[in-house]
Image 1: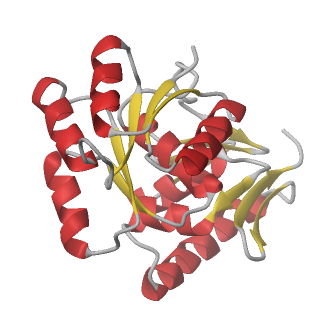
Image 2 (image 1 turned 180 degrees about the vertical axis):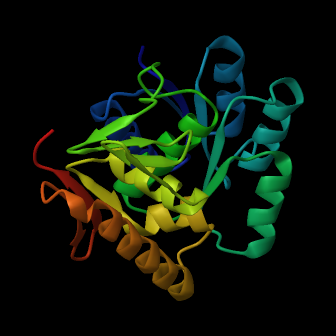
Length: 231
């Protein structure tokens, strides 16, 4: 089942670009150019996620989110804003936002954030649960139990190792945006968190070294790629 996004963005050009990109990636999207229209659309429709610009005419994004949270504590809300101030981020999170993305941002990162929020809320984008286990060549990865098995041997992963490997599995044979992964798992993409991620990637590469058909590659300027060349 297609997931439907309520998109509030007062810049008509950016709004249409975001709407088109969401639809090209399998989502439905209804675009509103101000907070009042967004409020009316929310009351009439059924949506799986709200993607909300903070600075809008007739009702700003924070006011819209407060009204939504007064009647619905569950629907995911992601704020889009040109503001990078810590106070605004804190205010958005206090209202009940699930994430906060500062402009300019890449479409790849936006999709990563949306999928992460839907996954955490239990709303998969296709309406289905993600696999309970992942087959990685000679290995079987169980993110719930945090185990990586090969034959009769099993390795217990740390929570961070398991979360990172799960993200890579969800993007297998594709590119995982590095900064997006840092923000999701570490909270931000600072230099020190980036170096910490490198340590965990090195560990995962070591764990997977028993199968030459499974590799974690670094994609210059883009991110990471889990390549599984055979099952």
